[in-house]
Image (cartoon, rainbow, N blue to C red; front, top):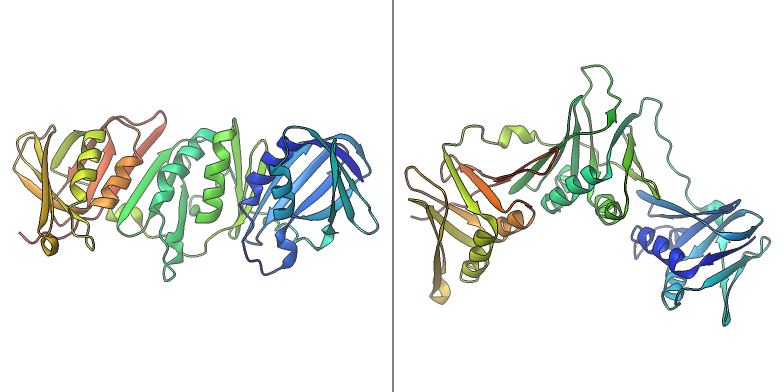
Length: 379
């Protein structure tokens, strides 16, 4: 088979799907891209067994059709050195010898039998379907993925939980110290009878792949899932991944419902003050203390071992009895960095209960709640 393709177009497609490929694979065939030419459409696939990413593009002067597996690193490293120009791919169907011809030279590869590439998993007949705007999914993943854990004992917390109700989609991630709950709408959903719990857990790796791909996409994304696998169909990409198995924690149970203390603060001012003060915190605990009183926050940190300390005062909107609470500064800074609103609302019950951090104004059709567990204060 033979076809002509733009070097930069091909490289951009292959770079996007190459992130799936592991540095060490259990099957040697997984070190390759699968090329499948049908008519003038070239479909490219990369997989690590658990996750498969597929993309396709139109090529010129296509002759013949078939499948061939091509060494991914060799091909990407070669394409990266080309400026924009047409490349001719010529593949010998009998021995899979492959020649790439540019206006100035030729490059010889040996392909492998495309039939050895793992087959795609098929969804069960009772699979569900969810359609939502690409922007909603992109925002939900990017605002929750930083909260996923790396916990071998509780693997369900190493992914993002999609909780689907007839009227809303809730996307949740937690590592037991911090939690993010993002509620958004969708275009359509197929939900079974009322007793069914319609949810799945998306592992961190495919979530990261989607985070990189979604900003380049537009329109709607179609998600189909059964009890084992999930399909994400976009205009230019299709991703199939195995879900994380197990029961996700009851996230609503840990969110305090009545919080008498409410503070409104400028997000960037607080974030910058925390970054400065946290330099002086104990390196092991990273503890910063926040004391709220009379429209003011007193931020302090110290490291007794090195006899260093720092404090800052910033303005806020707060009326009520004074309250002190301690947080791990790196977690709080990370949460503030994942909120878009210029002002935030902090809600608290007392120094021993979780604090809530909310945007003062949510984005359209979206509601964000972030939770951070406090650290015990000595005083």
